[in-house]
Length: 256
Ligand SMILES: [Zn+2]
Image (tube, rainbow, N blue to C red; front, side):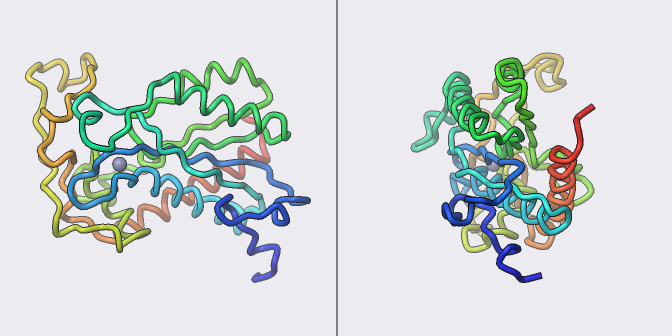
């Protein structure tokens, strides 16, 4: 180990044309986050950071374990938000059509370049890519676009004490693992949330978007205060092991 070949960048933040030219990249990864407040203790771009960090760790493992090479795009900060969030300063709500056009242009370029595997690494629960990916599967039949919601791969209860919906114990622990300098846990609110007044909405008989300003006092949903970097590391290792294996199989196997 330790050869120049092993140390090639996995990420377009560092990769040069010299790194890319003549190297066989068999898949691309597109991290996709959001721009939204995350309680008082995490940055607005938390979903954007974590989607990228999980992508880096997974692509590094895919090379180390399976000798397959992927390249990671710049993360997209354009997420779908709820009423009551868009009103908060600097939060961005992105329309479905905007997200679809961004994704389509990226797919269109990859198709031309002969890179037919894209992992869409989603970091934000409000993003819903499945309908667009179904459309794209008709328009680009050679492409395999695989959506990975990194936060729903492993059951939270095996790693964390309090369930995390938004800016809670899981996301906070993962950020403490990757970027401890940006987490201010002593400033965190308790992430308490107010349920709907209508039973069938709480029981998920039906769905409406939550009114964020009515749902939470500190913009978080889920108590982050028992978060630790150790919990985050354990979760990240388990999640990225599974994603790296999926990357390998998507590159080397047919899906049926
Ligand atoms: Zn988040």
